[in-house]
Image (tube, rainbow, N blue to C red; front, side):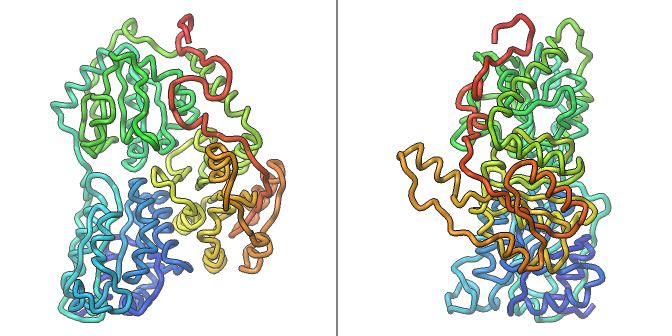
Length: 561
């Protein structure tokens, strides 16, 4: 077919199954945007107000639909703005395709000072993607897009980028679209010999424990996890990024808070789909020197120093756990030291007591959980209630809670929630943010209004960068420049055409959320709050033990704590 590069790009995207492109038009993208106009019955082109929102929206779309998200930006400043969202997607194993415009092919790398030129744009994209390619002719575009999709679906899910210079988009040629293989499966499969060896180790274990991270969710490994855990009778401790891999209602499911009482007793600890690191370094070694560690990860480096040495199964987490469950030998009941229901309930009650002691966050999280349907999507942010929600918000299914992973990108939550709403028009989407983080992307109220997205954002407003203020006071005895000058959020939302409410307590939040859910469409709730106690004792495992008071129970009756 005789096609422009822009037409080739859009037609190949449609062939790959893309239904949405989140992007902002610009002169280097004109021919791609015109091709999207011609294909508007196949692909919806959604235009936010800042390039940063394009990649966040693509990430939210990807993590809640199971389909790759696509963003498109102009070169230079557009790429730099989108990099924040790409870095978050990279941290969270999210399949996002960034289509990056470029200057004229003849000028790349020559420093002529072309519009939007930056030094080595490809090197910038390399830092926030797993793979990048550039088309040099219109004929190369379909094959490059095909390769990008194959990369997203192989090994560890992560963002990829395709650079297309504007002369390639505007040029035309005899273009052949690339075939999309049926049943494409690029997942990294486990080595069967290693599976047999590790199954033997697990089969001989007395008290195995499974610790899961976001890699289990990104590989849709929840069913395999449940089967392995039930066959072993092993407690499952979910990291902050692994919440939803197994329902919190499952008798073997535990948060990291309750997990503090479990992990030191494991004789075999399976770490599946997790970096197994905290913000400032490796997790503490809970064992007394004789625990065997099994690391399951697509990244072979996930089981090396500074982590405790162990055995590594380099594989997709879901495929590996399914293979281990298949290979496990029958284990005599007398060999296993099982966590009895009564003891498990004691652990959960102890953890809940730690949670309930922190107010007003506990009440706000209960209000959120009460109002949001079980299949609703909760986008958690870096705010005092959000930090707390990482362990306190009950999660009943995969893809129902989204966080920023280790990237900790302030301000990501609101636009990420908009992308989730775009991809899931029949589900309730609620994002929370602080007044500090909301300032990053509050202009996207225009996007919520323009597209009538079924999204509710809750802004917890205390007039400060609250976490910064708390750390400053703790470390230096006083805060400096952490105060904020806020607009009237309710009036501002209404000015954008978004309905809005202000509340002053958890009961008011619960009622406002339920009203907004019934009404549908975009809505903003400002929750006026004051200083809150630090939740970090519940979240960071500097050492095993109680988070905020009370003796930590043992998972086994009669054992010392």
